[in-house]
Amino acid sequence: MKDTTKFPSPIYQETVLAPIFDTFKAEYYSDMMSINYAHAAMLVEQGILTQEEGKQIILALKEIEEEIDLDSLEYTGEYEDLFFYVEKQLINRIGIETAGKLHTGRSRNDLNITLFKMKTKQYMRTLLNQLLYLQKTLLRLAEDNKDTIVVAYTHGQPAQPTTFGHYLGALIEILNRDFQRLLNAYHTTDRCSMGAAAITTSGFPLNRERMAELLGFAGPQENSYGCIAAVDYLLEVYSAVKILFINLGRFAQDLGFWTSFEVGHLYVPNEFVQTSSIMPQKRNPVAVEHIRVQASIVVGMCETVISALHNTPFTDMNDAEDPIQTVAFEALVRGERCLKLIAGFTGGLQVDEEKVHKHIGENFVTITELADSLVRAENISFRTAHEICSLLVRGLINRGLTLDKLDYDEFSVAFTEVTGRKPQINSAQLQEFLEPTHFVKVRDVYGGPGPQALSASLKRYKAQLHSYEEELEKLEQRQIEAADRLEAAISQILS
Image (cartoon, rainbow, N blue to C red; front, side, top):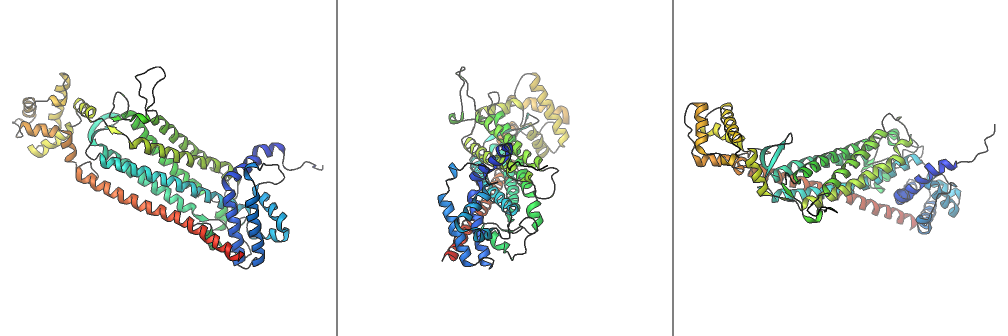
């Protein structure tokens, strides 16, 4: 039976082709034209096109760029996609015999994968720059709060004193690893697929290295089959992004806890506080909620990308193309916005030192250091010291007293009861051992909150951020130099 229907089906046009056409207009048109120029220049340089053919193609491409009004361009179904639309415009201007030679040695397969990689790299550079800015913001805040005491929690309960700078240092260190993961993923993406053609390269003497150079890639991806079929660059990028925002979501949980009325260890400036429409006393730091939900949305989008590629065939397929790329790019855009919000919000945070000090007294969090100090000063075992301190805490709790109400006589009685002798330390030493500043000061081993240890850590983090800044500058500079090289190659042909 003869099939008289015509491609595309109205439903297929509405649900698939038109949305893809619109996305290509918005996301890929400029990069697609860059690939056209670069491919034309490479073909001329390789002797596959004559100088005159290359000149005609490039001038016609420039006319198309000047004359096409992308905003008013609507998908009609006359051409399958934006690539064929541009190709037809080229043919209309210089004829099929010359225009048709631009597609020599290439396919929409290698062209599209290269487009996706170019756009992924662009969004990733923006994300990496914003992540670097957040890290710098946190580092400044950590340096300003190297000596600011806060309470560290374990299992949701007060554990030990540390400093806000030490806490932030832990986050900076995590974000440094996140940055490195993203940078590694960027380098995986930074390999050009042009020249792979449909999947097996071409019989024409293409210069794949030159295409990579003109388009701002570090080099060509080697295996042509993998250029088209491999999706590990997507898996690596969005796994790294997912890890980043899981880490930041955990930080947001702490922000919500520390800014709550019951805890109140962090004060949020009014610029990030909303009030209630009915309760005039409310100070709602809802920016924390927006950080948390945006981070969660990014994680979900990344999981969508990763899951969509599960159990797909190792070949060319639409599963890794426009539909999933759209979700992927939105994750990077939302991620960049979330990072900007976190940097703005955290930059103005202040520790309520009075409330922190009050809670330290109420929660006995310096008692660990009393035990440690007794080991050193009284030459007793930690278990013995722990027993003395447990006895003191139980006594204070039973009488409804806080640790700062512990007097020397009570300590002396407990010490004698456990050890069978009088303590050698005096009252002043006892009070010093209970001070949160002393607790922090003596923890000066590598990675600790002590003054020298923390200063050394922050110095190392600062040096790491400086190296990342230089790396990003190199990546941006490569794109600028590639654009200059492409312009020079075009000018050489036109001259």
